[in-house]
Image 1 (cartoon, helix red, strand yellow):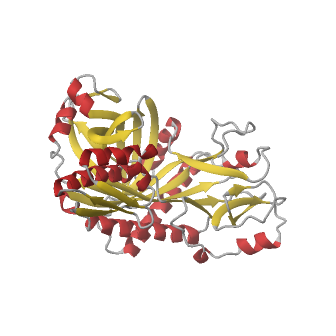
Image 2 (cartoon, rainbow, N blue to C red):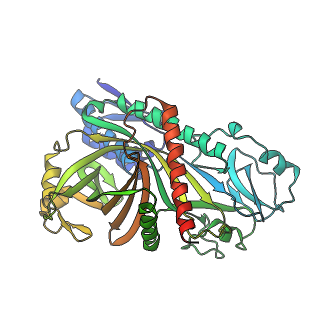
Image 3 (cartoon, rainbow, N blue to C red):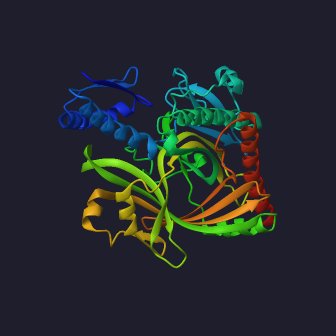
Length: 457
């Protein structure tokens, strides 16, 4: 009997193939008449069918589920938090705890065991364990790929070490994309971008009445809450930038050697192409598509397809953030460095039905309308998120570009600020060169923030 073995990128995807209560794998078995064995231990899926056609059909459905899991919505493999200290009132140390805790002083139980790095707020009076752990060298704190988030205290050495880790992951991912079966039909590239925003914190215990469950706190205000020691801490990075900040940023750039380059309008689209045999919580599911469209010309509200992304591998986020606001800076955003690889289809016109769907979409002021899409196409392509972007691009010395995005996502309007090399790293031949370029990129973003603060004193 024909047999096929597929390798899963990670063990978590097995749950998507199985589905709630086994509903998804049952659908695949019923439609293909194949036996499917999932081995979570070695991350493989074995497909056995009565004929090759059935095996190929089951393989097609399972590959859709795999791509849905990793192409668009995958969270990064690891988030590294690097915390800047500006206050002399407190000290922060890298301690091993399980799970990650935040404490308000040293009066806590220190018998927790585990290998999870956590940021711990302590008084200047330190006991032997804290002193010992705080003297760990960064070279000893290797990034554990099994951990979602790890925290470090800022130093130039720490920053460089984590940049090197991000580049190493990018290099490996890029090589895997180049060697993949779909590589001949796709363009592969590495993206390294810096975003401005704010690191915010919240309690993992949404049932704790002492914490406003709908509020995001900065680290200082969260630590001061009267919630007892050992509070489980989670964080998120908000990329929304205020309009006043954007105005000051433009002025600062134009006064310091940056030049306006261009303005681009486009829409990033996430939708689902319905496929029989793929199910979701609300019924029929399908293949998740991530594509970008732009106006056909300046005077038209009609759109054309310019990009279809098949893979987005978010490898690592490096968040460089301040834990207090005591340095009197007017502009003090946090930085997020993104390390990711992408794969795009070379022939964007290969999906004829998608092109037909796009031909009925209309660009309206700050948005995209589906009003004229025929019913049969609206049933075939189900809208998820349309994200309208108007980009203003500024360049420095033909090396670095800074993009200011005005975004309208489902009626929510905001600004985003991102910095990247003008020429993306399409192929990494020399890791050291890319590391130096990334460190320089971070330095330029910090320098720009310093210039903004100097001009407003």
